[in-house]
Structure formats: structure tokens, C-alpha cells
Length: 252
Ligand code: UDP
Image (cartoon, rainbow, N blue to C red; front, side):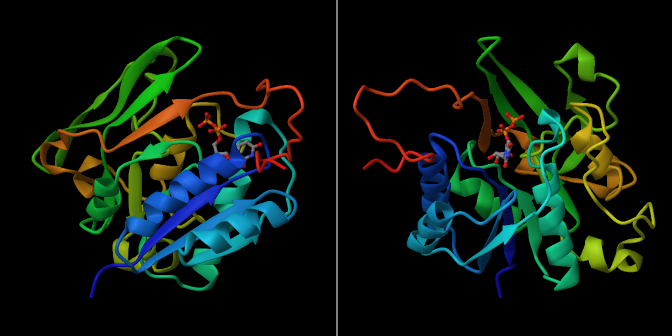
């Protein structure tokens, strides 16, 4: 029996939302089941999102977070927490992966997730539009053992683990069966909106594992890029004159 994958995606209405969700949905559709796509919107479940999800043919749950964004840096935090609560409450059993709607993922990535036992991590290529550069973030591995980290950004050097939000996945039972994993803290595992920008991932991961020995680097030697994190701002896009545009780029 193949392991369940639980893919968590925060999303919101803006130009290109339809494009992003369709693109991710089409990759997920190619992944062998069982896979559950948990898509979380902020204050209400929009009809546009519901329609896109229905058409993808992927098994999904469409959740609403019910909280408002308190700070721009909290992008997606409350929504991911809502999904974590859902997984914990319903004791969903599988490998949890946070896939933002706007990034680019290979099929190979989703296939590799099934190899994870406790906590898996891998290097991610980050494309930063404003700086016009690509950097690598994530583990340096010897086989599957994590032996170091790519540290590019000076401001983030103090982080314990140098992992991007799209560069790790973990066994969901860590959330609701902490004793089995001897989880380092007995606190509820949540993403904290009070955390400084750039430290969200490490603070979250520190609740799941004690150190690198409890991590699995994938693929072997962490030698491949399996997904790209794009920082592209699509709120202010210019559209051709005369286009009547819904908020999420479904044209009429
Ligand atoms: N997001 C959201 N509401 C917002 C901003 C972002 O739901 O107000 C979602 C967005 O759709 C994406 C994730 O949160 O899935 C991360 O957002 P973004 O890519 O803008 O952040 P970055 O990764 O560039 O910091």
C-alpha cells in the first residue's frame, strides 16, 4: 500500500490565482494516489477556487481559516495552521507537505515524498525577482544523512535549520502521536505568526525534530533540485485594455 500524501496549499484571490492553482492541480493529478490536497483560503471559500478544485480531478478538501492577515509577513501562516489542526483533529495519516500555490514542482518531488519516514528535507532553488538572482537553500547531504546547510542570505545565518517552507515534509503522526516520535516539545505544533521573517520554517521544524540525525536528506546525496520557489509579485499586473477580469484571471 502506497503512503498517503497530504499536500497543504494556502491560497487567495488575486490575478494569476487561477493559473497557479490549475498548474499545481495538474501536477498533483499526475501523482499516483492516494493524495489529499488541502487548500485553505483566508476569510471565505470563494466560488472561483471551489470551481478550479472541482475540475482538477484531485481528491481535495477546501477549508477556510476564518482569521484575517495581521501582517504581510504572515502570508499563509494562519492557513497552514488551519490545515495542521484539521490533520490533527481527524488523525489523518500520511506525509504532510506545504506546497504554496505559486511555486514550481516536479513530479519526482511528490514521488520522493513517499520515502520519508519521519522528516525529509532537500535543497530548493529560490528565484528572487527583486535581486535578479537564484540561490540554493536546504541541506548538504552525505547519502541520506544531513551534514550541513546552504546558507546564502546573511540576515538568516542565525537560523538553526536552513530550510525553505517548500523544502521539507514530515509524517503527520508527529502531530497527533507525539510519544511515538519522542517529539522534542510537548507544545502543540503550529506555525507562529510572531516569528521574525525568514525564521518561520526553522521555528516550526524545531518542534518536529531535535537535530539533523532525525532528518532524511532526499534524494540520495541531495544532489537534485526538485522544486523552485519563485518570489514573483502578481498583485500589480497590467492587463490589456478591454479585458474584463475576475479577481483570479478567469476571463470573460
Ligand atoms: N498567501 C495567502 N494570502 C496572502 C498572501 C499569500 O493565502 O495574503 C498564500 C499564497 O497563495 C501562497 C503562500 O501563501 O500559497 C505564500 O505566499 P507568497 O508566495 O506570496 O509568499 P513568499 O513565499 O513569496 O514569501
